[in-house]
Image 1 (tube, helix red, strand yellow):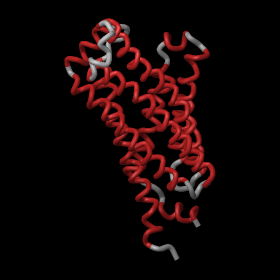
Image 2 (cartoon, helix red, strand yellow; image 1 turned 90 degrees about the vertical axis):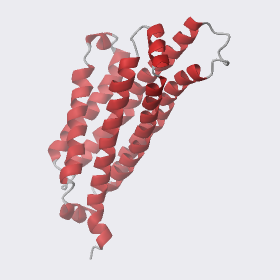
Image 3 (cartoon, one colour; image 1 turned 135 degrees about the vertical axis):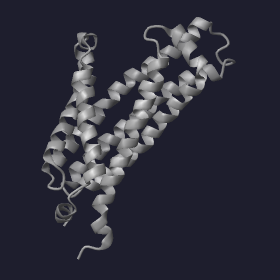
Image 4 (cartoon, helix red, strand yellow; image 1 turned 120 degrees about the vertical axis):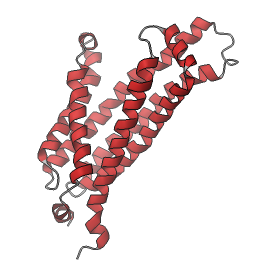
Length: 241
């Protein structure tokens, strides 16, 4: 007979994953569009440096938000692994590994923002640099963050592809959600490889249609389902048994 912890486990996993995913959405949107977007002037290191100097506290909150996202990413990887384990323990583990590889790589990417902040914090270290050189170096770190983040999304995309397949195979989550999650994962992978293979891809501005919209729909649908509907507990217990 199933004990109380086994009966409540799938609901707890689903809710925890949904809450963590929602936190990632909120923090990532805040950091990218409320902070980095207004502060960074594309192709203008001097204006970007002036923006950061004018509101350094805002930039610091952006860096802190990205670090918090990494923590919640680990929570999501763990809870989704436990939630999808009854479908396939090996594939659920593979999905979690790709998610954690993405998170680990993302740590290195966020360090670019920390390095940009250090330039403002430690002027004595860079005393031999001219103002223009410091601005260019800071802008380089900011650009490296964006480029590096796109590369890390290859691993996140594969995670979503495997996760989508697991959801489709499951009996306790809707197949449609799994399908659009897998489409979002494919979008991440395509968007990361396309600029490397086809230089004109970035100029065409296709990322909105290839990755941003599919990700918002796919990951948003999964988050809302986990938060509002959770899982079919009876079917999850049957699969686990």
